[in-house]
Amino acid sequence: MTIRTSLITVLLVGGFALPGLASDEAYDVVVNGGRVMDPESGLDAIRSLGIRDGKVVEISRTALVGDETIDAAGLVVAPGFIDLHVHGQHDVGYDYMARDGVTTALDLEAGVKGIEDFLAERSGKARIHYGAAAGHIGSRIYVKHGFSTGHVMTGSIDGGAFGWFMKIVQRWFKPTAWMHEEADSEEIIEVVRSLRDELDAGAIGVGMGLAYTPGAGPDEIRSIFEFASSRGVPCFVHMEEQKGVGDMGPIVRLITYARDADAALHIVHINSSSRSSIDKYLALVEEARATGLDVTTEAYPYTAGSTMIESALFDEGFRERRGIDYGDLQWVATGERLTEETFGKYRAQGGPVIIHMMKPEWIDRAIAHPLVMIASDGMPMIEGTHPRGAGTHARVLGLYVREKGAVTLMDAIRKLSFMPAQRLEAFVPAMANKGRLRVGADADITVFDIMKVTDRATFDDSLRYSEGINYVLVDGMLVVRDGELVEGAAPGKAIVAVDRSGS
View 1 (spheres, rainbow, N blue to C red):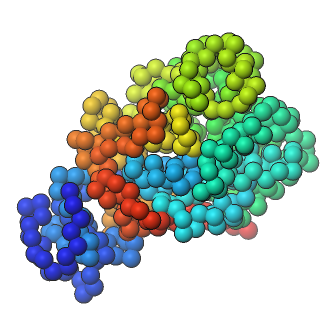
View 2 (cartoon, helix red, strand yellow; view 1 turned 90 degrees about the vertical axis):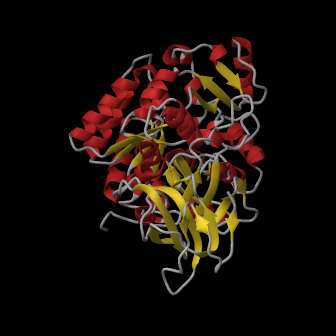
């Protein structure tokens, strides 16, 4: 497929002729003759899109003419993918996301402490749209230690992801006060005040990594849910660790906190938090929604997770809690599987580790469930990192749609775009025009070949771009053309929330 830039040439595209312009003003970009799929309306038909000033301004049964023309014959034209759980918030990470079809990447789990700086630093530099939650971890570190982390995982957009990442890991993911110490009443007030400051500055909800903060007690968690409820925003939560295989306590307590506070709840990566109990956890989500609770969830399409080896997840008893052994851990830096001896060595040293802990059938059931949207939990893109940061979205399309037939193409697109937009649109105005393809929608668009789309990143070679994502437009600008990144394209905008507290 090629880009053609003639404004006046009349030619056949996808079996029909280009007529004259449908308006007095030229389109900036047209996408002609593709299979346009809109999960909001259910449209699934050969159509052409006219794009002007970052918006879809026409959807036509016949071909259109514009300053740039994308021949989409034989390709699927979908809303750009929206990922609510991306830790790789740096320029390299955004490149991998774009090549995977993502047009908006948000970190709503770990979040940030210092959202103003986070947003300002990316202004005019980001290939795709960006944003983050108010981070409970960052606020806890600030209150306990007087240090503002910024974005915990990656720091600056172009400051060298690996170097910053390892500095943060070595300094803050060692067992320390923010992780294990309970907050007293005054500290809880300070944590909530810190979160309030972040929301006032545009942070998207409250991100909570309860598995990483076992010191956060019921009073603190309850206070945060009540605060989020007062602001009309969700809590995006990595639930606490199971105490053993099959433990239902974490999700029961989480739903109780949300219900008692009348707060919205989004449960991150329910697949890795529930593991063998995936069906029971999903049933509780269904039950809670049936009683009126605003609760949503997500999953990623891999059988392994990834985190920091020095985090609280690997405190004493982790093998029993998770039903794994040392050999299920893979050291990112070398690719080796661990032993008791090397586990001790690397835990003292600190760094990222991959956890092989799930069965394919558990993931299949999570991905196929109608309430589960897709989110990558993508880590900073460094050598040996988890492949989900590069291949999550292509993997859903290639493996779960084309090869397994576990979900329909329309359902997959819904999970990748429309459902994430719906989760946010009540308090993030920009999302009301994303995740769908209709006149007036933002021109965040992903064009792919369903017969070729494939994730290429693996656990042994994680820094590989996906294939079969032909074109990606962000705010009406091409950031991927003919399957390659467009050099210098940086149309990404800050995605921010609005205050719904009524105060």
